[in-house]
Length: 108
Image (cartoon, rainbow, N blue to C red; front, side):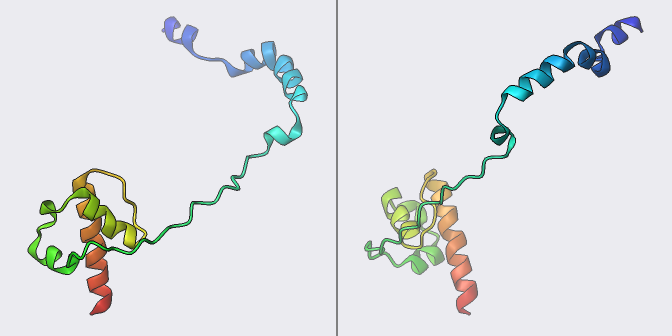
């Protein structure tokens, strides 16, 4: 229908009208601004903090009793292995379980 054709973008017509203005504008931008910026920031070094909770983590894993622990204790475990410590309690527990499963798999 003619309505569809009225709303279709005609790139060639647009460039005929504004192409020179775009080129003039681009000429005012320093060449260095066209190059992608490469981040020189480094990730913060992971700080390993000893777990001083005294919790037998393997036993907690076997008993599936992580829910009984406090978030602060869960974070202590994760921190001691340089793991991410943000998230809800359930996420911390899943992260610990995944980590312990990995440790068990490599010890056998």
